[in-house]
Image 1: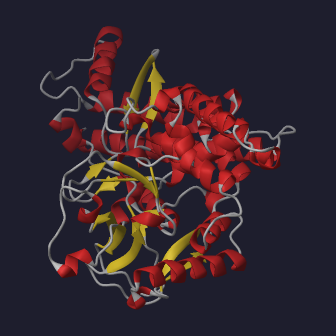
Image 2: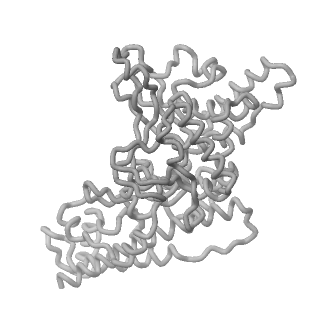
Image 3: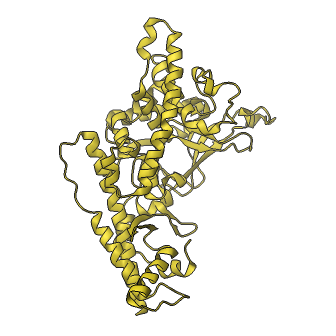
Length: 456
């Protein structure tokens, strides 16, 4: 709970923090960019052409291309200016993996029986999508169409992707972040995955037992299932039917899954369009509507200039920083955490004082922190506190001092002692996260000191 007076009083961010944050934007984890080459860019172009030719939307052919930014991160860009409301991308639903249509071998499992239908157990979406990814990568190997083959060739390196996600990190790497929320989320995700892994392995085992010996080479193990779950976790999206029927769909769509996160600087949005024909209760009688096919469509919400990147907002799963790192394997930059419509900052950093945990951001501190410090100063130093506004200059300075101490502790350098490449990447990601927390705390401390000076 944050009181209005505290929010207004601390609506301050240090100029240095603003300048640093605004020079960056977000992306899916760097694992999706580290192996990007001219071959990838060519494959992406072919994939775009294949999908657009399927739609017979010639005006969209050649609009998008894959490119690297200055940090080596790949993203989707446009070759020509795109106006507000214009269609940027249309991916036919038929070419998406969708959680309501898992492979038959998973549907036949006891836990996914006919009685255990989709609408009743929609929460199992990650298991269903992972099974579909397994089916695409292994069970249908050698039987993929051109779109599927191109798409699979562009997916990120599984080992690099794994190293970016905290659910796979060692206890030491997780602890080094200094973030209790991230550690708890990673522990919860680890155990939640166990059930999905077992269901998929059991289903695949039953499938293999029904095949001849020559098909056994496509058998999968836990590592393959974990890879599929990593892809589902970092590349899926959620859409609602525009007609209002049926539960929310979870999809993984080619081309769309390369669009990076922009947060408050996003210039595009996505939704399911023309899906009425996919629901037997809503069938249009208009010929123009009958010719349309259900598709995941990306449209510009701001004008996008030629050679600029297409950016979407990943939503609540990308804020605050620890949740974005846990979900997608990267740390968001500050502008991506600001809601421009409501002028609200979703960044946060945690710190402990007198054994109690608090969360703050660059311009807001919680009421209980102010009251706790006010009580301490009243009891230990006899400082009088204004009950109407307990955030006195003395309280502000005391909090600022503690926040600064914690900020300094977060920039200690790690020593690389014989770590594996994957473990080293985990520690590097943890270091990036600590730096983001450091900047938030420094900005908060600066704001508190400025506030105290203004009232003194």
